[in-house]
Length: 288
Image (tube, rainbow, N blue to C red):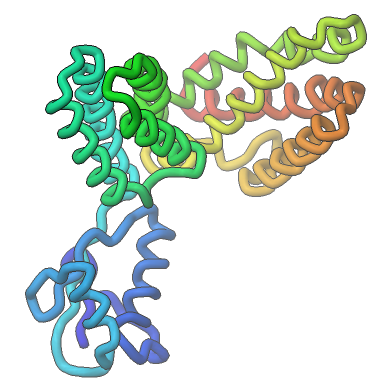
């Protein structure tokens, strides 16, 4: 078999005995490049999922061609998010107007969408999608549908903006850090003086900010003109590894309700690490 991906010949290891073995190898390569295989054609004919399962058992050394089409995962997810936001808007309008027929159509469209695009989403995102589907399957007159639709639109609208312009999203994250920088240093004092709620709000924002930064990073690295390769002399992979270690320690501190450790991590670990990171991001972009 001759394998191609996006029109370019793709060599597979001799150990690939079946088409399925070769596809698994090529799928890993595509994923490593931030892409997803969206179509498989054997001998010039695109296969359905059922046909692909049958073709996967064929001998990879036989005669014929296997042509793959791969797309950047970010592009595919962007289209998926645009469709999701359209469906949420339509379902919300149908529920608000009490139009049972339109709401039934929205349920059908949502079910088809969830089956087609479910694999694109993280566990957190999938939980929002599942919650909306459950709400949609409930009482047609439920006021909960427009309410959760509003939350969905804000949540997934932010995700879509990150994919469309990861550099702008990273700079927005840097500005959020600017807003909480001093608060992170105040966390220990606030925890010691009974202002736990204020301290916890700061920590929640900090953790969400780190999650957002990690989420943006792959597309930021892929699309930005210049990106930092190190932070304060530490290579980016090692920097991220150390930051993940801090987050694990923070999670343990929360579990143990260790306010002293939470405060120390906020002031002496999280603040300086984020400050160095966003400084490197701004420097790479030539921003002040």
